[in-house]
Length: 472
Image (cartoon, rainbow, N blue to C red; front, top):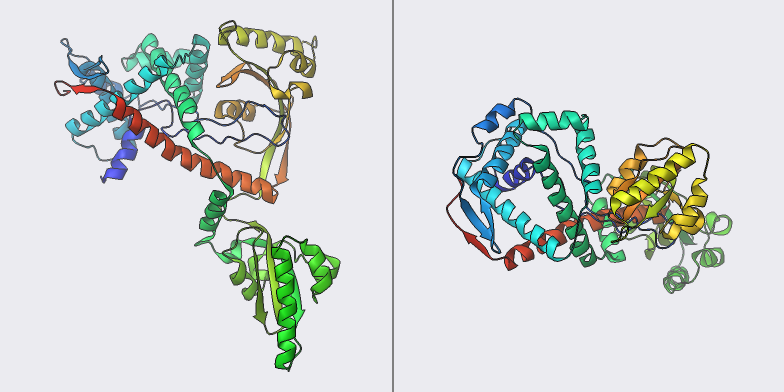
């Protein structure tokens, strides 16, 4: 197993409840009111249980009667039993994946390093005053059970057979949520996505893409050159095409320039636009001339047997960026937690709102206007139409599980506690701006991966780590 494959397998084997990337999108639906606290943070916590047959395999790696310290992180010890417990889970997960097992001492060292990084992050979270209360842990607990198609009772019976008690599992959930909230706070501010980043991503997507699978819409100015034209006539027509190119590059309206200077019929009747169509329905000269340009880019004059052309990329449907999506129209009530309002208290209050709405005793929009602590409150909690991926994962997961008209149970996110109602869904064709927004999401996610790796390295570097006896 090469180093990268081993690292990937190990990451899965450690059964972390969070993705190691803080994949934040930092976007909200365009229809939502300013201040809507729903930008997307780290990936949704997840855990896959090893097969039940592995339970017997963990007993041999169970805690020894005599434990000892294998490392100290900023004066806090990590014990051999902690490493052995995590190591057993890692081995079971690797076995389930069917990959080659690395030597046990190598895997033990990797597990120890992972524990050191986690311990440093937990210490930083606690020093920063980050807390996770019992309601959030219970929500994560239910999410793990759903992921594994179990009830919470079935989950704990299964964990007991694997040698893990309820309190220990809930403590691990709490620690993972602490790490997630720390990463959200520390890493997101490091990441900015510029228009140049998006243009570069879209160009990279185009490289190696079958041109016939692309769709483009070009603005076109044609200055005809008569057959058997003299050199003087050719020069005059080229100068006219150059004037057209200079004017649109200077920011003048393309439609105006096309109407005044283009000899092509679309210049008069369609503002110079040729329309969105597959690239193979355009002349090869047009496709090749504009392939490397971003949307809004201009090229020309370029010569063909017909004359001189000025081309503008008005729209491009890029491979890897969807053209149609299922949009959701939702509204919500958000209660932000504070020392005076715990997550559990906020959830109880929202559960009462839900009961009253379902009983016909209250109106969702009226409750949102009165109680929601979100920018959308003045709109009755209405978030407008949203494309996939625009909300935090836990919010989006709950939204996706609803049918139109349904109201969710209270839901904890990094912003507080929500009550969500799905109003309707629709299939929609993405505009060019929306396609760029989705590309921005992808670029931001990649940058967050890189920012998290840098941040974790820095935090690990600042920690005082003393190695003691090696784990066994």
